[in-house]
Image (cartoon, rainbow over all chains, first blue to last red; front, side, top):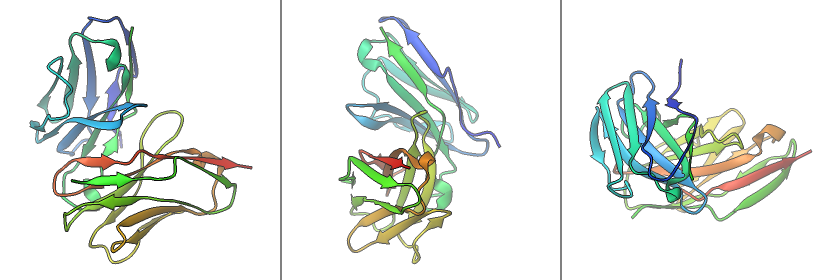
Amino acid sequence: DAGVIQSPRHEVTEMGQEVTLRCKPISGHNSLFWYRQTMMRGLELLIYFNNNVPIDDSGMPEDRFSAKMPNASFSTLKIQPSEPRDSAVYFCASSSAIRLARADTQYFGPGTRLTVL
Amino acid sequence: AQKITQTQPGMFVQEKEAVTLDCTYDTSDQSYGLFWYKQPSSGEMIFLIYQGSYDEQNATEGRYSLNFQKARKSANLVISASQLGDSAMYFCAMRGGTDKLIFGTGTRLQVFP
C-alpha cells in the first residue's frame, strides 16, 4: 500500500516567490494534517482537515500561508510570498480519524525540505 | 492544556542492550492516545507504537514496548536488543480531546557497536 505522498521532496526558492507543496493522503483516510518542523520550534501543527473541510488553522503562522483540500486524495499548502524564515521541513500526515483507537494513528509523508534564500 | 515532556535530549546504548526513553504527559482528558515516532537521519517520521488510555495492557510491537503508568502519567518507550539502525530521534506524542497531536521535543538515541 502506498503511504502518504508528498512533492516536491526538496524545494529551493528565492524570497518573495510563491511555493506550493502537495500531498496525497493514504487512500481511505479522512483526516489530513500539515506540520512544520524546525530546529527552534520542533514539530508544529499548521492546519488539519476532516473530510476535506479545514477544522483548525490556528497554527498557520500568517496570511502568507494557505491550505486547500479540493478532494479526498489531494491537498496543497501554499506560501505566498515566501520568506527565509519559512525554511523548514513540511510534513503531511493522514489518519482514519477513528477517535482514540489505534486506527487514529497519523502516518507521515516523507516531508518537503523547503529552503528560501 | 496538554503537554508532552521528554527530559532526555540524548541517550547512548550499546548494541544488543535494552534502552528506555522517557516520556511524561499532562492532560485533563480522560480518554487519550499516546504514540511514539522514530525519525532517522533521512528525515521521515515513522510510527512505532500506540497506547490508548483505557488499554489495560502495555502495548508491544516487536522489539518496542510501551511502559504505560497512568497514575504517574508516563509512557516510556523500551527498545529491546538495540540495533545500529535504531539510532535516530524518537518523539513521544499525545492525542486527546481534539484531533491535534502534541509532540515532545524528542530524544536522540545513538547505538554504538
